[in-house]
Length: 293
Image (cartoon, rainbow, N blue to C red; front, side):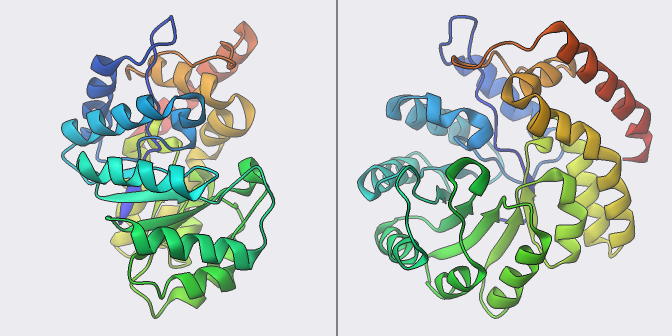
């Protein structure tokens, strides 16, 4: 996977049920704004609040509707669940699997490496590693990633550590492999591309896909300075829909931009008036900058 893609939010109706019609519309909304691939059942998809059957159906709907590659989130704490979800995703047309580090129990690097090798050995589609320590309290060391990159069915990684120095170390250790290295934070997209990244899986691409597309386009045109400038213009909006207000804030902001994002699922709660006002201000600032994109 190269370019930028959203960990696609999952639209739920007011009662918390999966809204398949809205999900199909959302695929079209982000695709029309230039995304390069889609990631159903990622962190911003509320996948951990869905049943296995709902996750499988979400991936099926996205794969059926999409005209770009689909990188399906299939990771669970255990190998059996992960492989079952990966096989299901492959059956409905997903192109690759994004597999988060096993969470809940603590695992050392040797255990994580062995786990990923076992998953990659049995997966019918290419596997992308996913390291997101803020949620799992577990990260993949650059040395571990370097060894895993040699596996023929490990195709790449989404690094959501937010650590550009570690990102560079991973790139150095995977430089000789056919290995896609994608960043997981829109606030450092330009810097990550300049450091050798091949793209990003970004919450920002849900709400402002034209912006992430423009940043990647500037990098591809050889203008990393421009890519960093455009990234800087999006930092406040990105932080608002990730660090400050989370998924309920992201979905609110998407709805304000006309995206069929639906509602967040419990235990998430709707954002309050103060948060809505703050997000409206961020969106107004972004709209003023849109001419740059």
